[in-house]
Length: 338
Ligand SMILES: Cc1cc2nc3c(=O)[nH]c(=O)nc-3n(C[C@H](O)[C@H](O)[C@H](O)COP(=O)(O)OP(=O)(O)OC[C@H]3O[C@@H](n4cnc5c(N)ncnc54)[C@H](O)[C@@H]3O)c2cc1C
Ligand code: FES
Image (cartoon, rainbow, N blue to C red; front, side, top):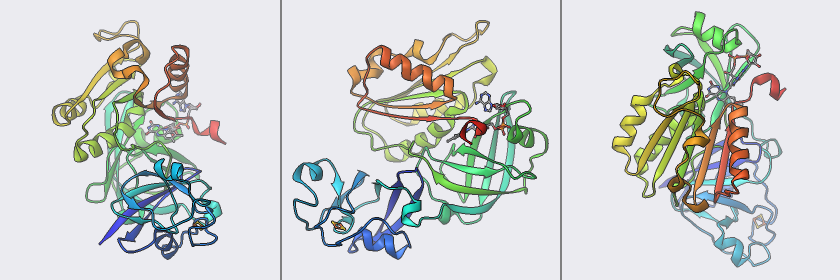
């Protein structure tokens, strides 16, 4: 029996390892060629200490100097002593480069390109080696733009199905990837992908959850909802999905289907344009129900273009709402990241 352990490094790079039930997680990592920080290997120095974000495990034997009672109660673990008892996610507090971890890279074939609205395009990739590109719901990859040396980042908008993964992209007039997808992208084209990356991924649902999506910032939430349907949450999950114009609203029927199938999942759509005929107008912050904020005892996930993410963060700060956990992803243009 073995379990899937995701190692999420400080720089957002994630690698999965298979740890046998009777195997120390550090041994499984080294077996996979991932040199996570280790010194004593004996539960004595604390060098390997990291945080277990989700999953069950046994801590093994160690001394208090390496891991205090309080740290153990707060889900800190020592991979040189711990054994996984279910699939787990570990947050390793160093960068992947320090652990000689190479970002996974492979070629993939475009399976389909679908215009979803005048402003959004869906595309799917057939992965050559799906096992080499496992990811957590909410993470992203870098995709090469065919015919150019450039790459662009895209969040997975689905979990893999028969090696096929989906994406949701804003069609920016004149944009490099946008032009490729809208003008010449077709099934059979080959791209290079690198990843998975990012710390914006779904954690265990232990309290009410609020999803705030701006435009194609909906993408990672679609992957998260797929996972939530599989795990059946016991807490309410509310989503506010805001766009600029009526035509930007996509995948609403998908959200309706999730609302019918996932217990406790509800959503509202919001359109900002003054001339919109939509029943809810304005920004996502105008449509945040008090109940969904749960007096701050809520895990907030926020994703969209940088101005939207900044506006929501400023709003929450202004209202002195400090969520129990707050995760966000900005869809920054690539030149802003150079
Ligand atoms: C971690 C991460 C995940 C991402 N995931 C997604 C995703 O799932 N879906 C998605 O649609 N995008 C996503 N993005 C944004 C994406 O990487 C590209 O920046 C975007 O698709 C534009 O690429 P392009 O080649 O078409 O335009 P470019 O050639 O890069 O840009 C053309 C022009 O458009 C401007 N521009 C670029 N982006 C924006 C914007 N958001 N708003 C206004 N102007 C802009 C640029 O400044 C430039 O002037 C993500 C970004 C990051 C950092
Ligand atoms: S390496 Fe020393 S406690 Fe794990």
